Amino acid sequence: MRIYRIIKKPIVTEKASQAELANNCYVFEIDSSATKIDVKKSVSEIYWVEVASVNIVKTIEKFKHWRKWIQFKRRPSKKAYVTLKDSKAKIDFSLVK
Image (cartoon, rainbow, N blue to C red):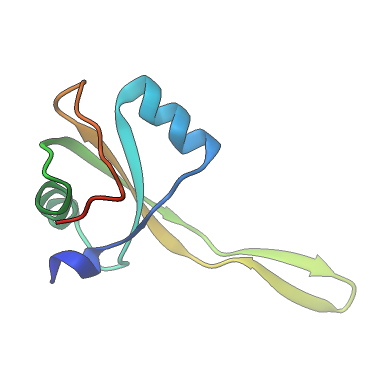
């Protein structure tokens, strides 16, 4: 699998930014067939950082019901929580290799 196809985009929310400050942990949306090893290699090569651990979470599809119609609220996806080895290292999302 190619490096740039594994990581779709970084997730920047309030919860993700709190994890970044407290645990030096970053959140990425990844491809549905990606593994922990693929994510670790791609993050280290794209952002030039050393990765300590990778945790993967599958999100389910959620629905919003309104009268007779069903509207999809969120699609199923896969997220990766990436923790860096060096506590002083930061990922700059504007700089990509």
